[in-house]
Length: 253
Image 1 (spheres, rainbow, N blue to C red):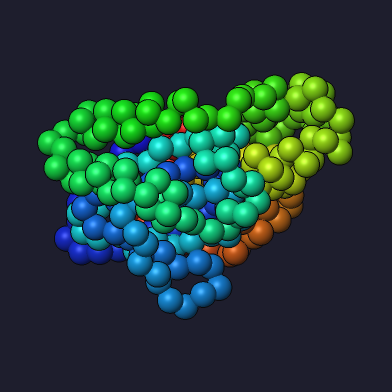
Image 2: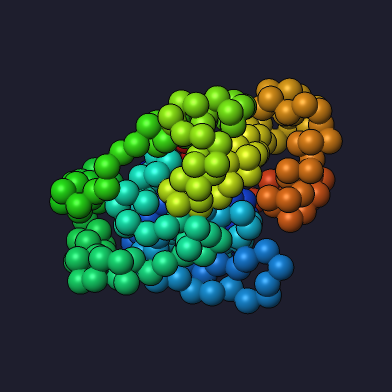
């Protein structure tokens, strides 16, 4: 995915956690990110890998923001990096530590690219070269993608069964390849659907939102919004009315 936003001045966008693992390339200017509960904005490198996230961040975006994001299906980033994903929980990693000099060349190529299509080809060529080193896909990965496709509204017992694992084995595999306990990942996936709908349709009533996303009732929805955004739903309404760019409205899992 490519995001390109031009404005007359820098601005700040809220970004609650999503259930995807990603690699971000900041092509024009690096961004500064503030974690919920912290005061300072931290400037990020030109490219970062992001694992499982539970904490909302605020992103300080330049007036000519150009970002390419590679998103991975469940287990995909683990297969690429071969690291336990719980070690990347709620943090990001400078990709120069992961891919050495290669990533510097990719960053330079992206800066010199003359079109969005060229940027896409550069990122895809970089990743295609990594195919020989990928760890094998497992039934677990397909089962977790099935969970994501159903917005987290599938029982954990069924997903474990589709993974051909016992519940205990499934929980260990989830920690290794996703970075989160399975029930928490399912909740995050359902919340993400709700938040993306709220960005798309900010005037949608919270009760209708809860119904569309499979919540038992509005209070369960509000609990998840408070946990994953760090603020109340009424504050979310205020933020969305003031935000110039909605980064998750067109996000597809």
